[in-house]
Length: 357
Image 1 (cartoon, rainbow, N blue to C red):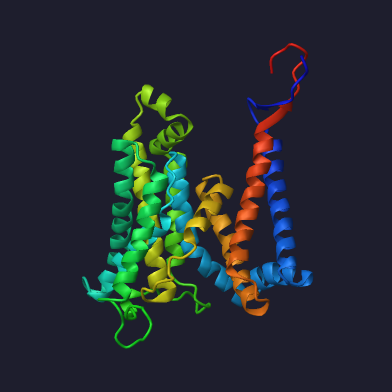
Image 2 (tube, rainbow, N blue to C red; image 1 turned 90 degrees about the vertical axis):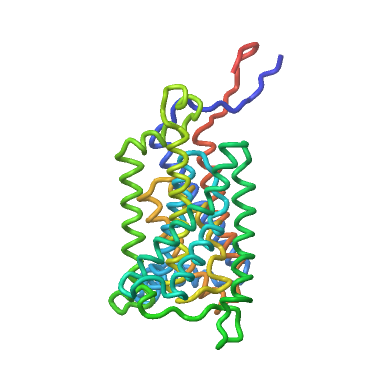
């Protein structure tokens, strides 16, 4: 009988190997991304200038990076929370759209006093995001319907609902484009320090990161979530409140995505438009996976990805790089990290003659 080389999962991955694999995956992913950009026509010397110097070490570039990172933190946290309890939220964009719709409804109808209009918009957005994910949650718990399918389909429905509103009742009569009327001053986030488009929503995103970190890392609910994520059946057999834990975190995931929608509408766009939520689903998944669903790491990764968006905008203008290339870069880095971590968790084993692996 010939020996056969097989993959064997390591009982425990050493910390040095895990860190090395993660860092190596990042380096390989960035190298492959650089090669893609060079093939797409970007000069090699421009890569450092656009992705590092102009993005993080100039005032204008840094302000754009921070502005882009504000909603990215929220959608990254949304994906990470759901991932902790093995709920694959592929409808983040749909929940974001519903949050933007709810915030716009409050703004256009002048709900509540002007002094509390913005908090009401955020509360409505959070509730709308939770409502939009509640149906997939119920379908999974009641009928074992895959949340991948249900959340994805509801995301498409949400976008079509936005189209219906912008081409219909909410279309700004003073504008030929399908956009809503502009929000009033009381309905938008105040700019911070007069620094580009950076607005006060930054504090909300950072506070959300701290709160989620505290809940997941320092409370009983976080312990329950860790147990459910590792093995739901075992967690249920030991008497842990699996259904309650999953429900709370999944609803919070939808709510955070909804707040992200309000953040974009009231922070940078100052109205509802049909491109407001595009691209956030894939970015949220990339952030959550690269951060390993750790809230504080989500904040850091979201900031870095905000820099990629900022540099990508420049590359699109000056080097005719398509939007698809920028999305591809995210995917390349993610796949490089996932592959490196796979080989860190598994090892090749060649059994001895007649033995077992």
